Length: 409
Image (cartoon, rainbow, N blue to C red; front, side, top):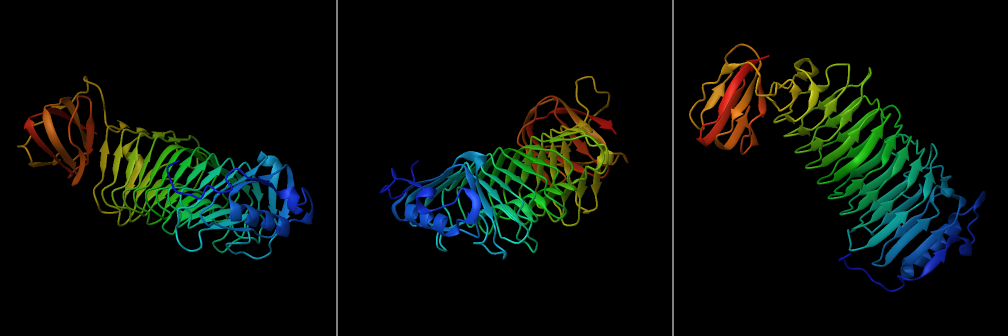
């Protein structure tokens, strides 16, 4: 894959049964499982776990530059956690690079991890580089006090999580934090996070979610002080918060927000330059988007099913809505008033006394569009529209003037 690792032992295959692990769930298998992990860690290779239930009070895998894979037989291969105290190493598996992010490679896949009300995390990657978690079912880590997390990435970089199914974890089904940057989550289902918990908490930078479903969680996704994360896919179910963002430059796109009562807002508090793109709203309760104190530079674009009443702004700062229906009308037959375009680079202030939309009927040659002090585009095309609240501003920089109409909302 282009990253360094020690290939010695890469073809070796170990089996947990050879170390005395009990697949019947009758006897504790901690010692046997730990011995098997230590063996594969020493040489590199693959550790196989056949179908069965294996009792464990906590496992640790310390990486040392070897290529390691722990592979199970799917949901039929269960690690059932029995630990009675909560710590990093008293859950399913705690993988560590020894305190420094190293060029280590670890793959854990096709396993089930079942928690309880007293143990720590399900699957935790600490100090890992280019790790892989695939097809894991992690559930019922219900410990309080900030534990109770299904999958944890801490201080890990460039890891990939494929199709996780994580449910019923007390703090978060998935947590990415403590400088765990540039990780990718593809697909998966984060479901049934109880009161006070989130489908995912992201407190680091540059992570990407693609096609991940969050359903029936008290909170959907939290960006807590995180920067430049991207969530593209579907967020559905009935969370208290669809998105809770207090970070910088986090973008959310491509959602289908479900119908029914109880859907609460995309909630921005102290967020800087958040983006909300291509969301289809079906929610019946308002507000859908709640802009709280300290939030600046929010851009809402190319969404549908959102009206002015769906947005509440108590931040005191302007925000941008562009190309959103029905809030921004579209179509060449939109009735409106011909717009007297100011000189290039000069702001226009909406002094009509009503909120309104500028609809582009002729693109011109435009190099910069600034709405409410936020740069939102470097060109125009016919059919685009910009919501300008009463008192709001828009500035075009152009060499050939565009043509627009103003439609009062």
